[in-house]
Image 1: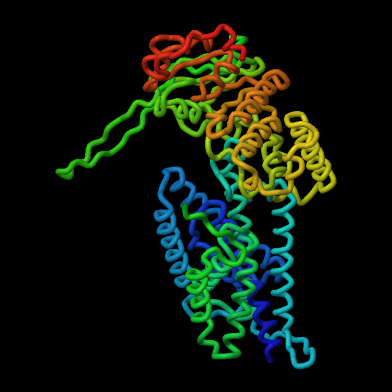
Image 2: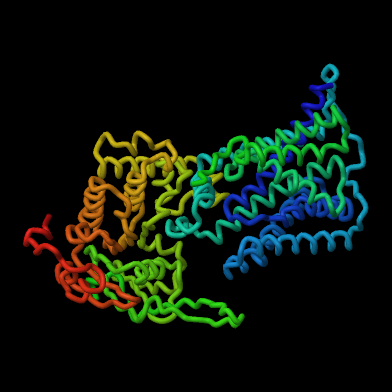
Length: 289
Length: 288
């Protein structure tokens, strides 16, 4: 039983890790607390449902279109909301409040167009593998492999390519990047596109299994933020470690208590980390003086 | 004209500031930081800009490097016969046309390795695009290998065969001492194809041994790479030993310009910035 829950936790954690990585990519490089990221996670499955079920387009093509449209929404947030505010030298608080505004507008628009109730994309029950007492569904395998492949590719890319060096340089010092021939506004667009890609994949993988409603984004965003904090803000590996730990803790909390305690456990862990290890698992202690 | 690389013509810059009075009224005050600055920077020379804190030196650098806009005036950059209007060029493109800069404080990327700090300074944009760098893998690897080799050659040229930078190339740059970080910041400027380099107080907070090393590196920038150096400095012995020309800025205006000796011995500069000389100038001072 314990191993079954542990595996379930790792699979859920891999999705948390992917979604949290997308959030961290924007936060670490631009310092924008990108609350509107929640709508990318929510909107991708709605795009998929539109093309797959309403317009009857093939699944692969529908997924590609849904991901592309989500990336466009992510780019539009940067182009029409954040970039103009940054140009006016608005404070991080103004950016965050605008981000909340964008999220509320988007949630209401989706609710207006598709309704508030839960929608199902894939009504059939997933087949599963049984190894001893452990059951893993095909959907879970796809979730874990897809998340791991995207996280792995991104990490390799981050470590070894000039693009990766530039992403890490942006995290260190944006002004210095400008004097080293880096087109910072253009580069931010690339980061928002990748962030949108990760949110879209996470959203589609989850909604394929559990369905979606217009409000699924916020709980996932909170989990992504908790994962980022317990991993260690500032490091790109941190949300991956944090996501996996959070996923496992939530799964084990279901084993020990009940499913209703999942969020309570997540936030208890967050409070404990903030009190006793604010730098997270792999973050570094900040010098106070 | 041919011997000038940077033309700063009547550049002015003001900042406005809101002040809330005790009775609640808010008034706006304007501070003129730069007032009709005219400066022609000579190609292949080291020009030092001196002046007290708040005189407008760093603001002038921020304008030249595109981080601030001017209110009035023009800036032209003429490296090889071509004429660029700097007011119309984005900051990131300035590095590509040969203008480099080292800041006073944030001179390195602390969480990048020593080698990555060098690689990022290469002005060749190949490999920057997230999507295309997935493809042409062989070409990309070849270019990255060449960049790394070039960085190692620069370390050897500046610091000799056995140097801490080659040894620590995979360590985070923040693990270097403050002085070494400064040297890395300067070494990095050899990676790009820079023609004009702006150095903001390169010796600030550095011990005398490293000051000598920094002077050596700046001399190599001019002699080996034909760079033109524009530097802000408060260390007068350093300016005397290194610079060819000197400019004194006071309250946003260029008040004196000329050879280093002329400017440093100018009574007005003495009175407003340097103070009285307690010893007589030795004729060999300037060569020391």
